[in-house]
Structures are given as structure tokens and as C-alpha cells.
Image (cartoon, rainbow, N blue to C red; front, side, top):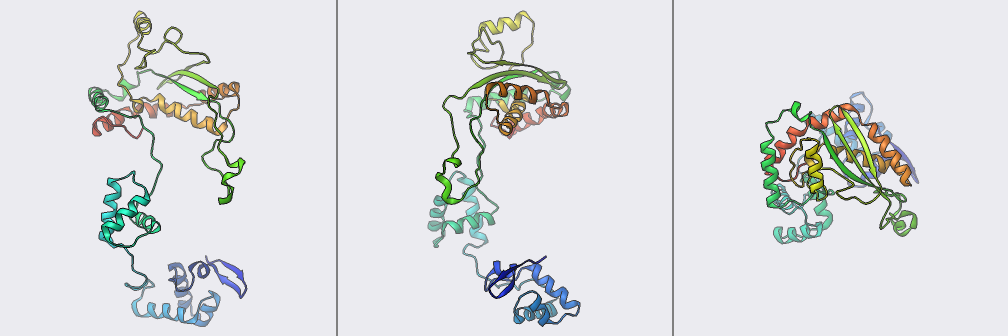
Length: 336
């Protein structure tokens, strides 16, 4: 469907206005010209109805008569500065140096291709290479020893079936902070409103927070414990690789109650299913934006109880795939 807008000289076709003089006719408009021609409409009426020149309509119909197609002939249009070979070299360089800025890539391309290139040209060339600037994901740093231990741990537990992983009780703690102001990532403004106080993202040095501990399994969500004070080994007994959790009082408490503990590799948050639960709840907190500690606690408990059973089954069933990804990446971080 073609739109029109009012101008000084009358109604003009939006496609013609956006294209500008000398721009190629869009395929949709060429197809409409041919359809009206096949219905017996004269070229003059077609040009008048679509607000095009008679010569343009004549050329499109003449090309359709000769070749039977409405596509533009090969060789028409402005030649690109970078050909297919240059684009392949540019793509290899961008993939090798993923953290380089567009200005650095432009400087390299000018020296490598011996051509005058601009930043906008590099943006268009990256789009032709199907590359785009994205915000990188945040993952914990892993040294060689930690990668090796993750690899060996995943290899040792790779034979576990999904039924065996369903018998594991996943427990962990997380910290939730009270959100102050409008903490969205984006703000609707003009270019000149960047220093408007209503467009600032406010931050607090030490916001009120809650330490939340919970456990889950494939059968459902367990009880939720919220702690508002300081945490040490005597008041807070849990077991993972954190120092308060590996204290002697923690290990003796677990040993007296004959609780079997699954040995866990350091910096392996991507292998724990409950980490995805914390991520879901924190996303809900950003949407709801509680203003006080009491509202934050109520929202956390409500969202904790609303986690469906199929979601838990999906998370626990994905553990074997996570182990395979860790082995494939030789212990490096995964997408989970």
C-alpha cells in the first residue's frame, strides 16, 4: 500500500518523497505499475495516480516487455567502495578484534585497503557483513585452574541422568536492593534534553538491601528466608565455596544431620538452576520497583511463590546440556 502526503505542489507519493530525486524505484512500486499496465490502464494514468513521471513508468513497462521482469538491470546504481573480497577481510578483522571501537576499525581499514573511508561507511559495511555492536554479557572471570576444575567436574557428572538431577536440592542466597527513582535503561528524550534532571539515572551509594536464602527442587519451591542483619558462619549455615559456608561450624552441622552435599566447582553459577530463579525474580523487581524494604520483601515472597512447576522442570532438565557445553568450551563460561 502506497501512502501520500500533502506538499506545496499537491499530494505526493511517500515513496517518491523518501527516495529523493535519482533514487531507484522500490520493487513494490514497480510491481504496482506492472499490475495496472496488465489491467489495461494507460501509462499516463498510471504516472498520474502514482505521482511519477511518464518516462519512469514507460521505462519500467518497456523493461517488463523485453525481459519479463521488473528487477533493475545489473550494473545500475552507485558502486560500493568495498567489494565482496574487502568485506570478507573486514569481517575477519572484526571477529578477531571484537572489542575494537568503530574508529579503530576505520583507521585499520584505511591503512589496509588504501581507501578513504568514514565511520558511517564502516557501519554500513558491518551491516553488510551481518555484524552489529551489542552490549556484552557479564560473566565471572575464570583463570586456567578454575577452567580445568570446571571441565573435570562436568566430565565427572556427565553420566548423571535427568532423573538423578531431579533428586538434587538446589540452594543459594542472593542480594536484593531497593530501587530508587526511575532506573530504566532507556529514557525518552530529545538530543538537547540530555542534561535535563528528569532524564538522569539516579544511583544511591548504599541502598537498603535484603539477603534472601531459598532452595528449590523439581517438585516445587521451598521455604524462603530473609535476613536483614550481618551474616557470619554462626548465624547463617549454608554450604558452597564461600568462606562462611565452608567454616567448621557449617561442615559439622551438616555432618551431624547426615546431609549429603554435592561438591561444587568454583565460579560455576551457570551450572546452578537456582541462579536462573534469582534472575527471574530480579527482573520482576525491576518491573515492579518497590520503594521500601517492606514492599521489597513482600514482592520477593510473592514472585517466589509464583514460579511454576514446569519452569523448574525445564531448568533442572537443562543441567546435562550445560555440562556438555562446559566440556565443549574446555571449562569456559557458558550462555546460561
